[in-house]
Length: 144
Image 1 (cartoon, rainbow, N blue to C red):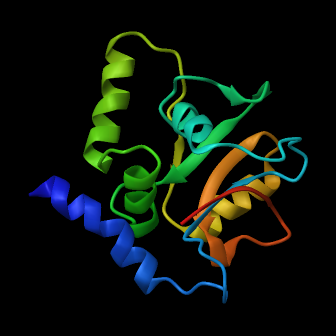
Image 2: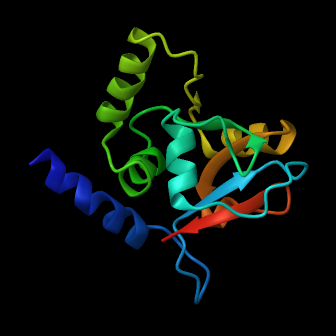
């Protein structure tokens, strides 16, 4: 039953989120303006947030996200990582147990905190609702 509710979460959040007319976007994956990365695929972002790689297109990146339970985190975990927040946490516990030196994404409590960090720290990557992506950051991927 938990899996079924996870499948509905993106749809419910997308319907509740305001979008620009004609734009089918719920989440914008963003980077610092100084980071020379014009675009990324969902697979690239997934690998980065799961610690399978340290960068995208030869650019070292520091992923940031949100604490578990925030609506955007739930949507991202489902749409990009194809797992629940609990599964994501367990994934990182397992990596640490097995001796991985990969750094888990930094978790913030709010969208403004994520956007501020990404805007100020070169090499950082994060995600925000599309309505929050502005000229202070570069959008490299839009997710419906």
